[in-house]
Image 1: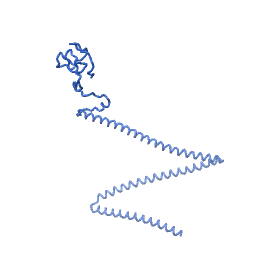
Image 2: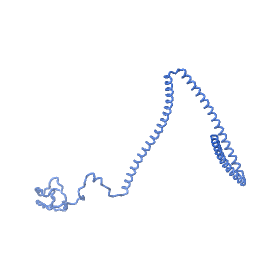
Image 3: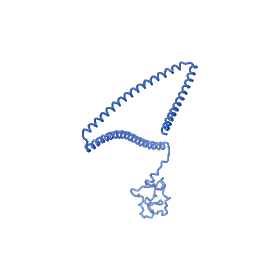
Image 4: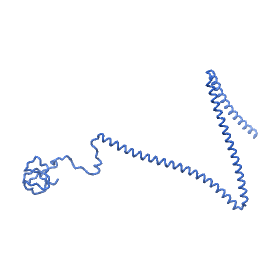
Length: 259
């Protein structure tokens, strides 16, 4: 709003300023208009009297109360006035998008962790292989060091050959013994499997016999089976007591012999 104290010559009679909008002239007489440069009371044509007592409250209302701030802070405080169904659907979509993005991040982190775990397993296996190889190399290094020590002490090469032949013969004997024990183990395992098969067959036969018994025979069989289990427990307990007594007897014999 321009200050009301500025002076401007009145416009010519019957002629409006070029390019000036005639604001709020509806309902006024034709010989009256509102001065466009100075806010005041309507002036009669040819008159330049201004209302110097104009206040802000006399300004026409345009629907905009006060000046809107265009700062970022005021724009961030904007909020939708009508919270209808579409508003809440938009909020739900925003939350769903945020959760989906978080899930994608978690899935990516989980995949990376799985890949690292697989890599760790491969590295662990590689480390075991390298440790075994290192152990073999250390054994070879020990042999070479022994050979160098003997060579520096003035031993003859023939003594090395004799030692090597002795070691080779010992290794051959150990290999033959190992193969013999391996064959015996295979035979024992085969015998054990055959015994287990026979035991299963005997169990099946016993079950068939029990199924063919009448009620009186079944009751008698159950009674005898329970007695057998009790006798087996007593035998096991007696064997343990016998072992303890034999051990105590040996200790007493040692004490008597040393006294």
